[in-house]
Amino acid sequence: MESQEIEKLLLSKGVKPTPQRMVIAEFLIHTHSHPTAEEVLEEVSTKLPCALSRATVYNTLNSLVQAGVIQEVFTEPGKTRYDANISDHHHFVDVKSGKILDIPGDMVPKLQEQLGAKFKVHSYQITFYGELNEQ
Amino acid sequence: MESQEIEKLLLSKGVKPTPQRMVIAEFLIHTHSHPTAEEVLEEVSTKLPCALSRATVYNTLNSLVQAGVIQEVFTEPGKTRYDANISDHHHFVDVKSGKILDIPGDMVPKLQEQLGAKFKVHSYQITFYGELNEQ
DNA sequence: TACATATTTAGAATAAGTCTAAACTGAGAC
DNA sequence: GTCTCAGTTTAGACTTATTCTAAATATGTA
Image (cartoon, rainbow over all chains, first blue to last red; front, side):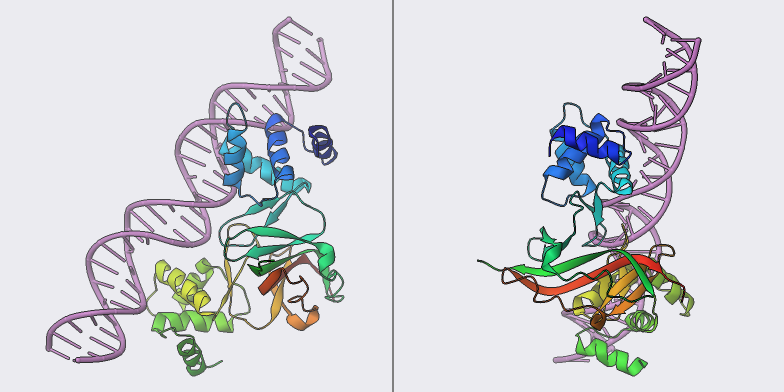
């Protein structure tokens, strides 16, 4: 995705595309990792003339989550990870390396309607834990 | 479950059933909430003649997770919750109250084998976010 | 009983994230 | 152009969740 598109995306979600927000959003959209706030700060600081502050990283990540541009991912204790892939998908955690892989939504049955009338499901996340087989 | 059974359970999993561990395990097994370490400490302290220390609560919870007696649950940023229900089940988070409900495993299709040969799935957790409908 | 080992403890230390108040930025009013 | 105001960014203090450390306590075995 190009800068211009990302700018439009932010605008369309009601987030003013400041330089700091742009650089964070671009990083998240282009990476396939599922970085923590600290990792975002580190990556983005090296790629920018002048570093941006920790608070801005946290503020921006929270704004982008609120706006629906990115998602929080909870797979391990104490850490929040961020994911700019907001299409229908789930996660596989390789328990050896800790790496997180995306699992396309169409690889598993849809569960939205499975719980019956009592539950109005807004969204759901599936986290698989396991090992990657050598192929 | 009775104390004696819980004692046997711990022994069978290789965890020495000290008084502190027993009281924590009993609380977790009898509650239907999904408490944080802090909540365990609070609950258990009131129910015991002399309080037990924060470090013991964390140590014990980690030991019980390691031994497979309880599970960690990740549904919200920064907090680890604990669940003594280790039967096949998933979680529903009521986004209004934050309450977590168990969803029996047989309410959703089994996903263990869905991912294909590349992924060796040890376990998976499904977290539904939504609202409870009035019935 | 004595010794080795495991457990518990209080409190210090660390890590992740939020808050605060001041400085900065940029769009519109004059 | 420059004034103003709301929104944004910043450094650093603070809070919260969790782990670490080293001493004290309990347990099991010779």
